[in-house]
Length: 600
Image (cartoon, rainbow, N blue to C red; front, side, top):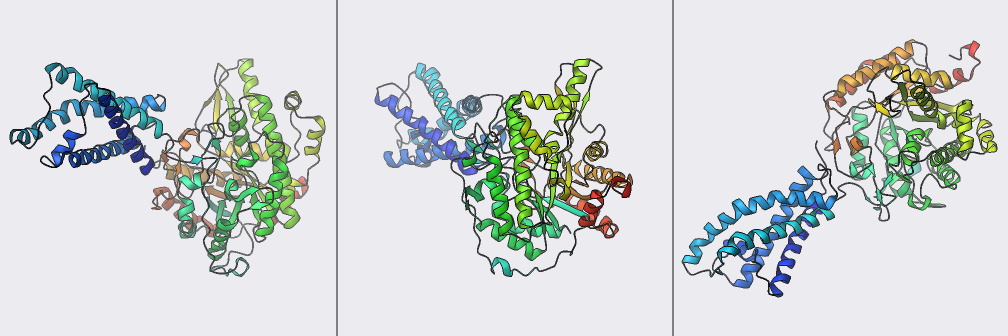
């Protein structure tokens, strides 16, 4: 596993650990304990005949440098691999340098200093045999113990940042006023089939709101945003799933920091990129707290309206990304944001998020009535492993739960069992009725169905969900969503954690799209997500480890991966055949027609 290392943080942790070792040694010697000095012998190698104070200073510098270098080794090769708390993990790692110090460095130092001692350049204190055999090894052990504990305690988060101390977004100067940007290459006047990619823009909090897992920051987009946009066009793509970093842009009620987005949007227009704006992606600004906040929906609606007024040329939106995943991981599985683990918290989060999606769509349409909403959702399926009625009931319930946020958004009546569940966990009948009366929302909606290798799950004999792999595939799962909502579809996310397997996975997903189109289902786009590699998604962004997931069309150096070349080829081959597809407006009009008049 390749990982991203916070080099400065790792070296600082190693150096501070070494400094603490020296401070402890000086303290014990001041108290009169016979603790050997570990710094002076190291300095004596560099300055065998120099001033004792200078020699000690040089030894200290070398000691700190060695500690810093070992900190890098720990950060790159060992951090997060041991199933131990951070301090104990650092202590366990320190046993390796301890063995080298005892059996390699100590004998080598003795040999290297022997000549200077014989020449009278150095006076080494005579140690008893007991001190040589026990005292020095014990001092080395305690010193490494202190060093390792501090290293482990300080180097804990290679990615992300404290939620209370967010970075300032860059605010590049525009080459021209926003309203005067002249596109270098005009996009087509009407959107038809959309080949797309996306900038991974998740930003949930973990550790009960203390740490922000900001993928745009971790993956370098805040620094390389201009290059990233250029790479989109280099691939031959025009459509890009992109989200403003909500937690950094939406500073408070009526307070916005538009500088970064102004520059990004201007460059998109210059390059002819058509964005699908993803306004809320797994997280919230600190001042809004988490998805249990009843003020969430009106606040996000305010932001959506302000965004639409600021960028009136944007037509395609995803108000809230993957509502099911967002609420489940935040309020049922205890991974992100509120980190709750109960049904009432889950239902509360679903109520707030679905209402936010409704109000955001309405706020945007108040500014731009022809806006189109691509509601990206995780395509899930639960398969019972046995005919046991208990297992069957769990699978049936989870197969209803996966639809819940979309049911509320699209005013689709839920099953009786789910309605009883909602009522039992805090949803009033009048609120449910409000959702069922918002039928206009879906009229401008395209349903995005995301699919990964872990989306299909098996309910085992104990009632637990286990990742099943690709059993039925996107074709079957997406068709289930289409039959329920009768909305045009888009394959809005997929990738593969194995970079070698990724090109084959790309073609399998594309052939699923082709097959479902041949079955008469209106599908208007395909997305490989994301443009670049991601960080820590192998652990679901639950912890900050710095593991690089090689899922991008480009790596984090912005060099192309094999799947990027395969996608460029796929687009080049199939895009001409899609040129005759109906426009999105035509697809939406057909979806609105009565079933007998060509609704399918």
